[in-house]
Length: 118
Image (cartoon, rainbow, N blue to C red):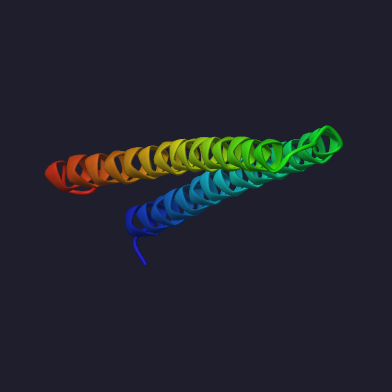
């Protein structure tokens, strides 16, 4: 095999491994960020539930109970929405990183094609 071809194959293999490594880093970071987000959300739900339990000790009337439940529903709704928004931000950031990786690889491939693989 021609040394030039062997060098090109070696370089191509290295580029593929670099791309796979970068892809894995992006995926790992995205999964870790999502896991952190979910732990934070769980912590917030536990704190909210604990506060509601404390507030139940102050309930004297049915109106107090209804008001307490309405507050809980409102707070939980806000937390769910916030968690969804933060999760989407993490996923959108990961998607952008993947798009940049693909765009960069396509750009390099096109440049090599133009120069005849040099």
